[in-house]
Length: 194
Image (cartoon, rainbow, N blue to C red; front, top):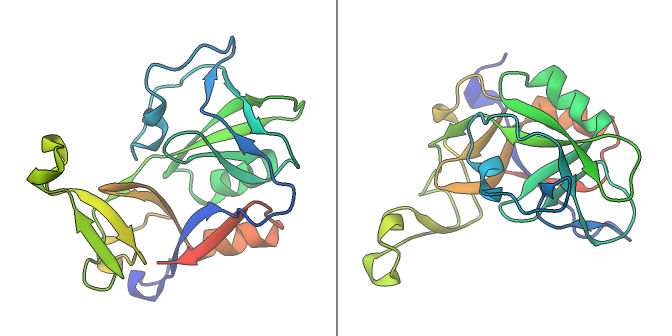
């Protein structure tokens, strides 16, 4: 693997400009019952197998290779996209099979199993923190908002996929993973260099 300072990193997000794209609600149990903690998929650490899950549609549309479901940006991948993550980042992700409403083919929920404290607060466009006057005492000192996210590459070791500490909605992938996903013709995701 090349020197980390030579590597590129990208936030993988949904591409809202895909014509006719579908949108998902928050994952549920197969019987439609809500999950106790739907945020568990974006904590940036390994989780216990959640068992069979249903991904309900919020808006029907064209099936995509990559999209997100409900709260916290929970990535949902088709088999081809999941295989890229499984092959190139086996230590960084967990993949759980899910049933997408109205689809016969398998899909997978991706959990980034690592979190890095790596925000470059100086190079990022704008960084706001929770303050005592915001009325969220448990969040004081944590990131409230980040625009133009930039990461400090020196804080990344061999990770290829990770969440950003304090900004868990950001799913970061390295350049090699991005290139492999693009070679599959990924539809539904976009990459923004961080």
